[in-house]
Image (cartoon, rainbow, N blue to C red):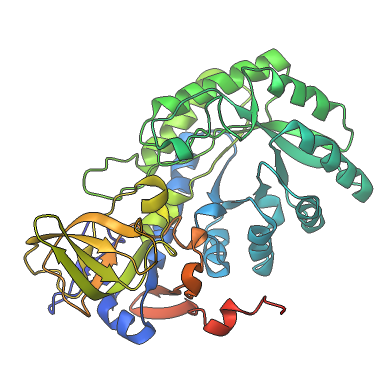
Length: 427
């Protein structure tokens, strides 16, 4: 059960269980599609990064959960309770943080096109750091800070020109990207000068991010090196440094990922090797690798369609509207039948969604016991970039969410209703 949340096992009835609950019973109680999160796994992963960085880095450090992976009030309470910081990229994510009184000094506001009302919202809440992403952002940001009589701390997001070997859609450190100001082109140096010219802004340091679902260590070492080289050339005193995150998540048995200890130790050693005696505050940004392993998506099997010599499609009651990753990135998963875990896996089938797109296929080739109507498909590693990218395509309500732990199952997000779907319509 290595892809499922910590402590997952199989009951005597052959059912998948984690968090002390039988997920077949949870699906019966709350319906499907359903997302089930294990609280112990979330806390365990958060602590592994937090404690790993503290042990490896002699200076001040902070692990920031990247809210874009999944952002919900119940989750942010856990993240705050574990002493982590929070990266937000929108007014909505910030609003979720405000709802739970997340410590504003531990919030970082990112984004390549922040709206003026979002920046005002961040300043009014007292967000600790705003990450400047482009030249055009500097003047309006300074004006908002000046109007409030504050000196806003900022980091400058630079493009280090480092290519992470991941899907092209989630590479963010190369020259050809919409994020950050490039070191190579001179835009980063110009941004530094513009920020320094603003009395209302305080440049604390630099930020970089090379991508998501990264399995290698060398790109992080190279990123740290290039950040320090640029800081030296631009005369920046690095009081704070963030080389990003994006550490990979294990979606299939073939994936070999970085452990929290490996990732934190490598980054800490890289910083210590070039920083000298003055160590900056070091922040890292795991999101997917904290919340992803804790979540499991549950779907009920409906119809099947066998095309002899071609493929068997097994249709479930969810799909691309709650999980866009297979369509967007060609993501691969390794599902099981949660109600028949011990049965022999003797059939290769495609798990197809219910939505009116030919590309709505969650898993192209799944090795399972021959699925039958009402079977329960469980897809592990579903905690990140599923619900955060979910839509109401075909006017289908989004799934409910349940948090499990110590034998209890708590509904933390109810299933949307048809009334919810039309609540914003005014005609």
